[in-house]
Length: 375
Image 1 (cartoon, rainbow, N blue to C red):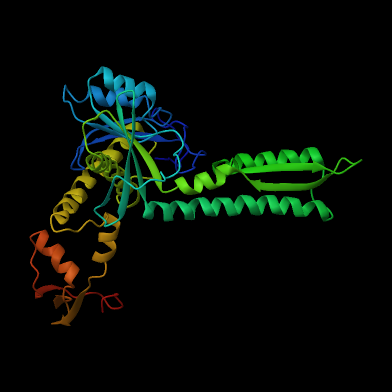
Image 2: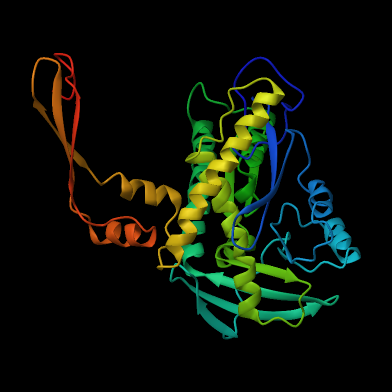
């Protein structure tokens, strides 16, 4: 979480920001969530805390419990995996290295996620006593194609613009400076630049560059084929492919947890400069998430798996009409009538144990002043 003010407390430190806010000091929230998605332990750390280093502190708070630890690639370092093995804890994580292309043979198993998305699974050869599973999702492939495709287009357009300037007046032409500019573009688009070969040729007998050639490497096609896939590693050598995948997908619940807290529950940005107020702000956000997640847990029992943001949008579609009936100079009668419930809203109300009938509330109130918005 980033902070936009001037004063700095002990928790406010500059670090790696996933929101690309390197200009702001950060605060780190370490949260441990159980299998049902409810937070169990939380710790507030300085913004420059290393994520892999927080695992030891989280394990120490288990008080001897032996759960299966699910980690994303950012925390699943080899040192942390060795530490979990020393603690006799089972684990599942996403492989940190580049994902290989989709296997050519038929998948060992095909199953659906909770959101009705087909997933193909292959059992890979075990390595060092670890079970490895390759998963590929068409939905993940489509999203990744869109993201990576947009970055490729921007990189290609930037190189093409630089190359076109070699033949135009008052544009960059010096060979050495062009190479520096190309290097900066490669650094800026490093997520896709390694898939291309960029070559700058010098004009004969001149200090100017003649042409910038951009060609695709074999890594271009390999990356495209692997966009929708990822490899899981686990110490559960006896588990089935489907059980490994479904257990690891609980990591998605953690990601949805932070997404809900950040966007819908006001976790960020932080406007407090004192550590005590920062801790209170984060603590209240966690409490608010408990209530939000309890609602989502009850809705899952009736097969409603929508995110909190989606539920909020659909809930805002409901309206209440308030009619003001003046009684005298000072008082009036308010008639509040809710609109008829739609099938989705009726299903939600029943799952939460709320009344689904439409009724009109009649209540007395002081008469609003002239020019009031309700009049």
